[in-house]
Length: 199
Image: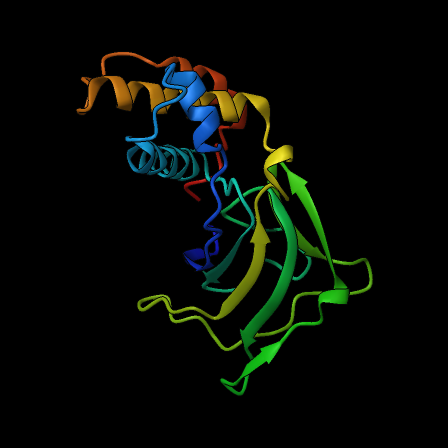
């Protein structure tokens, strides 16, 4: 069984992954600004849809994850969102039922199966925690980290194109289209699919 319980966004990046001007070029609406607010809404919506579907953060975002326990003494602890830039804090309920901090110098940030994870270094192990109540799960480990591409220039081109496709579809139809088959944006993003995202 996995350790993941929940996550929340602590600090959301409010920048746009694609500029309104670039979106207008895609929509062949250069020179028109009357729909700029609507286009910005579509950009944010498209980016959020991709982030939720593919367990990604497109722009740097601070996430706090809750886990019901550490994995085995030196096993990998998988993180929900990708790509991880840095781990900011690891807190856990110790045997005295008091929140304690785990030394970040004792962990290694790595990837397994294209999924970000952390593991103790070769001379360390995960600390002992308060006992897990199997009938009433509660957060015993909290991990705060920053995930996303460091700036707009680092966002993969296929992801930018998928955002633009989604914007075009929303702008031209102005309604929820029937979902009958995979879209071009799904094909572009297939490389970024993370099969561990639901663990």
